[in-house]
Image (cartoon, rainbow, N blue to C red; front, top):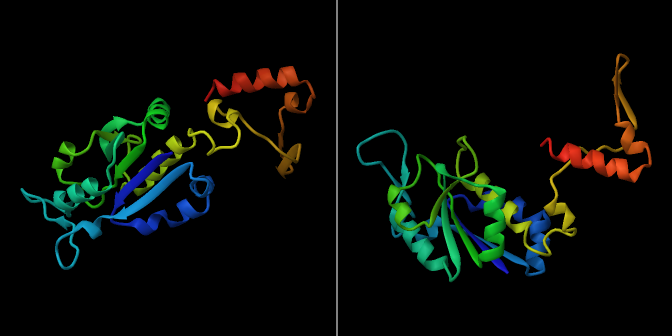
Length: 211
């Protein structure tokens, strides 16, 4: 069983994500385990403050290193990897997802907010990871993407192994011809309604390579 631990200041964002998906079923079967940790629970101050103004000045607030250190120390176990999410990090790929799904017992994900995290986080994290060359409001959505990408490769999470091993190809369903207006007809490719399974498989292989 692989364990996912996310450290965030907005744990409620993960509510529906964990309750209404295959991940929920996988947790019930004890195939995976996902825990969301509120960073504020590791703050020393009375008001649970986890951010402060940046040294050198500048806009916004920066997440403090002390509560993050305590959170990692609390949740980390053996054969684990700690990552923190940043657009400046190493690009997350399917190859990385496969490696983590196969080798790790635990993945700890530190989700940033505001103007980022105290740079000393790099002394605690094993890797800095980016899900793409763009910036989101925080690390919660990228964390969800990584959890899904890794978890779906764990045996038992997805029903059919072929669903996770093959590149996707275009899918169609009824009606055979859709006409949104009189001058437009959007038909299903003829090969898919030909009944020729060999040609259908060849078409799918060809189209999957175009992704």
